[in-house]
Image (cartoon, rainbow, N blue to C red; front, side, top):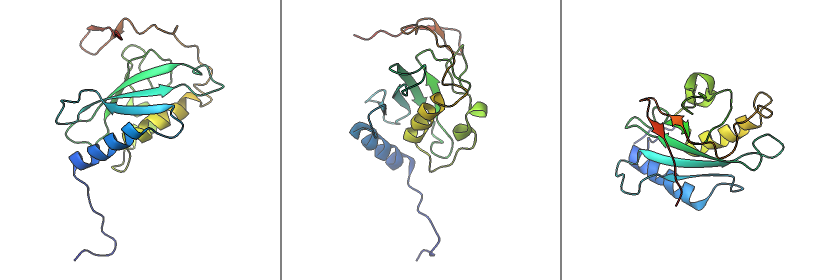
Length: 159
């Protein structure tokens, strides 16, 4: 019999299935969404996210694409988060698009209860923060030439 204050730790795969189901249903006002990057990924590691920029900021009306990678240690450790779309934000590496954990408190101070939805929602809120809401942004559609850590140029084509 469990003590009154104990908590049940949900296995990684169940947790990710819950997040997938929630992501597929849509979140809040529809300005943040996420889902599996590859339906054949049985380990559920690779995810995509979308954030529509908040109103009354330089991000308004822009659509930002992100990649989230959940290692086998998720949710004990945070996923890696990378903007595929070019963006100028105080917590994002301008060359790689990586959200720097040391500059983004949610990743730096990660707790098991946090979710990918929480990350995307917090990034959207960060876009509207005083330090980011008026930063000059790269021209829209300027996703070409994003350099990944291996030095390869990533290009995206929507068909």
